[in-house]
Length: 191
Image (cartoon, rainbow, N blue to C red; front, side, top):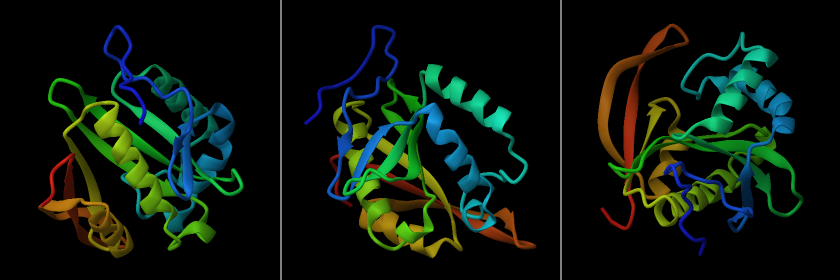
């Protein structure tokens, strides 16, 4: 188990080594990851599941975001690697980290489509949940997922997330308004 990581200003710190899952490693996102990540964000078959439209995102904007994240006291972004070969396959993040309320939000994308439906996302989620609970001492982790993303909803349920509420007709995609499911994970609690 990793020790609790905090700097003097209470900013969450990345672990000094990879976070190891059964199938994945999580490491701090590096600048060299950005071009591959940008391609995933701009891919319509991946972007449809993300929280915002990235079709027109530029390399300069991605670099500016990366520099912001490096100095953020409320966000941590990890690269997801295939543990068997070290291939960079996606990203996961903890956002809006609030150490007083012991709360954060989770985001994840598996950008390499040949890794979809093979348990890599589940493994990465379980690893980051353990890190958030043990090291950041958060108690509640939330995420938003669109109702049409049934594959992700199933994975989140398998990882212990439960439906908290539904934002009706909250998201426009494909000319139709979709519900957004707000899901919550309570560290150390079973539902």
